[in-house]
Image 1 (cartoon, rainbow, N blue to C red):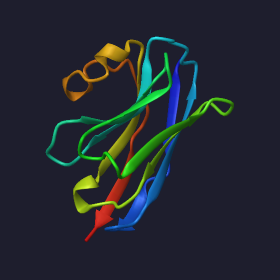
Image 2 (image 1 turned 90 degrees about the horizontal axis):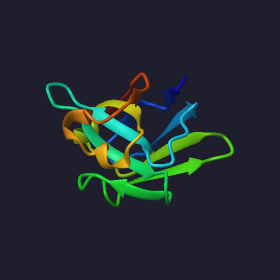
Image 3 (image 1 turned 180 degrees about the horizontal axis):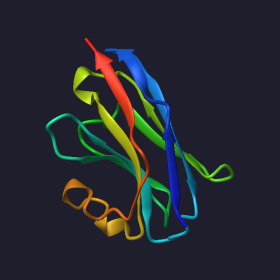
Image 4 (image 1 turned 60 degrees about the horizontal axis):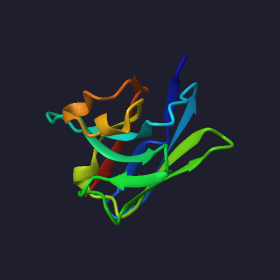
Length: 126
C-alpha cells in the first residue's frame, strides 16, 4: 500500500524560502517517478519537479528551474522540495505524487499519476 505524506507548507513573503517534505512508503517502482505537483486557484494541476527512480535524475518545470531543488533521502524514504526565491505565482496547494511509469509523469493535469498525497498549502505574499 503506497502512502505519501506531505508537510512543510505555510505563508512566506515573496523572495523567501520554504522546504516541503514527502514521507513515502510502499512505492517500489524502479521505472517510476516521485515528486511534486501543484494546483493554484482556478488553474489546472501542474507538475513541478520529480525524481526519476531509474537513475535518480531530477526534472523541473520551466517555471521553477533555478529556484526549486528536489532531492531525496532514501534511508528515510523522504523526498524534499527546497523552494527559494518564491513568487506570488507560486501560491498553490502542493501535492506529493508518484507514478509507476516515468513516461507518464508529464501527462496533462497529472493524469499519469498513480498515487497522490494530501496537499499542503503554500502562500507567497507580495
